Length: 113
Length: 114
Image 1 (cartoon, rainbow over the protein chains, first blue to last red):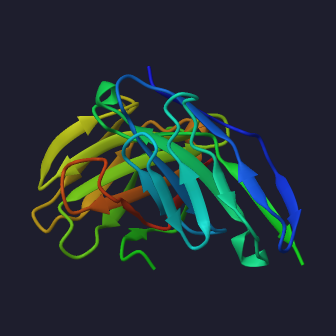
Image 2 (tube, one colour; image 1 turned 180 degrees about the vertical axis):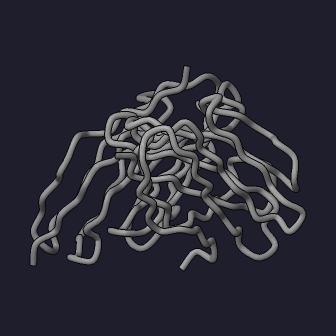
């Protein structure tokens, strides 16, 4: 079945540092890939998505590129802010799972001033 | 604010009891999803409704049931509660039935079973 593997956290960075959160997946066919963000005490929000190979999703300075050859969708940001502190979830939707999202376990990001 | 509301925010109850969680989707959204988030299982899809009809079912226990009403709000009923049912329960909504469409999540209901 479908699965998503994310790097374990927490990831702790100083403000303005470069961020990478790794995500790899296993799925049938050609899934759509997503990154969600969950701020403390809130529900998940869609951060960005990509629907086919080599697509780059981007939003609020975050980027992720759909890499079919490595089955990866790593999240990056060039300069993090304290306000980026949150939990980040990688997810996929595939035909094998009737397009219902499968989520990774989440990676907590803590950014210090 | 996603526009999705969930009540109550917190719920504390005892084993064996029954509770009802309520979700109001964003205005205009016809699809409602229920998810369970726990420390050991992560975020798991439970069930989807679209315009009043059940559309997809995930890892939902037989002790759990849901429905979507004509005004499109949804309720998740959890019965014969066990300690392991303690979790955050999220509702999400979207316009169309395709789960790949952007889903808007509510703030969640935290259920504690003692």
